[in-house]
Length: 191
Image (cartoon, rainbow, N blue to C red; front, side):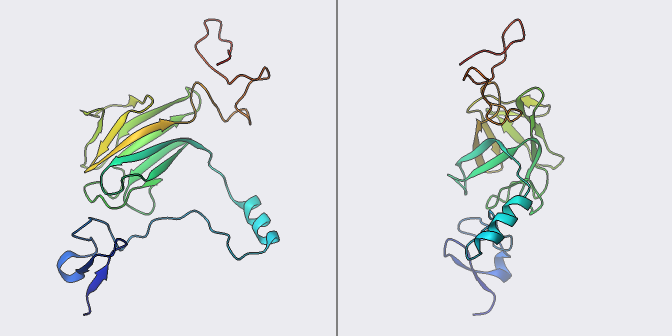
């Protein structure tokens, strides 16, 4: 019975024949998905110290898998460059779809000065599609755009942009409205 591997979905398969990729659900079993930091079982003082030391990268948006092996899974987009691939060192690690390159299949960039998210092709052989069109140059994303990589499709859901910004801790103006651009005089208005 040696050489058998059980994937997270419970499928049993031969590692000699299939390597570390489950032939039934296409999930890579050798690479473990990164988890959020767990603080279960630690004292309140330890938790407070860890929280103070932890670097926080505020979320600027999400990719939500709407079709493919990881359907329903969300991926956080942070400010700056977000490299997408299957490897552990990718900012957005997508496991289970082996047609997505291990490194730099695509790049999502949230630009805090322009308050927009841009999709760029990566430096791998894999193609990335934006609303069914192949991406060869930077593409500015809009709400609910569909991004396709490998056998997976993702929906883009922005958080930061014209209605909210992290520059102001609350994202809100003094009059209670959120910051919005587009006023001809350069001022900010209410929603």
